Image 1 (cartoon, rainbow, N blue to C red):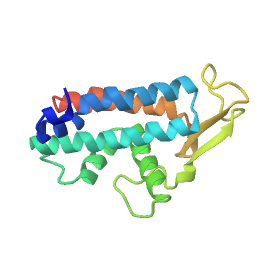
Image 2 (image 1 turned 45 degrees about the vertical axis):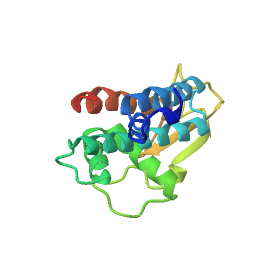
Image 3 (image 1 turned 90 degrees about the vertical axis):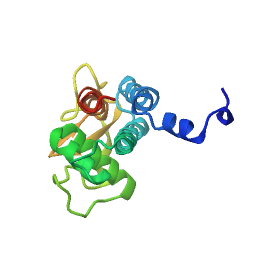
Length: 172
C-alpha cells in the first residue's frame, strides 16, 4: 500500500504506534548495542531512541486521554524516573546529550548532568564486567551515581521496564 492510499490520520497513527516503535527502533538499537559490547555511537543511538520512545508513549496516551496524573511530557518522564532508577539515568543522559549540560532543577534530581558523563574508556580494573567487556577494548560507560555502568545493559533493563510495566499498564 502506498502512502497516498491511506488517510493522513491513519498514516500518522501508524508512525507513532508505541509497539511498532519499540519493535522497529528501540529493540534493534538496544540489541545492536549489546552485541557490540557498548560501542560509543550505538550507545548514543540506543539512549536517544529510548528517550524518543517515551515521547511516543506519552503522545499515544495523550491521544487516548489516559494521562490523568501527567499534564505534560516532562511530568510523564518524571513519573517514570521516580518508578525506575535505570530509566532515570537514561532520561538524564538523553537530556544531557541533547543539551550538553543540565542546570535546571528536576524532580527526581538528575543522576547525569552533562554529555561527558557518557565516556569511552579502555576496559580494565574498575570497568571490566567479566564475560561482557573484552579486556583492553574501548567501550562506552555511563558515569552515574559515582559508578560506571554499561550502556547496553542499562538500555536493556529500561527497555524491559517500559515494555513490561508502562506499555502493559497502559494496555498498549
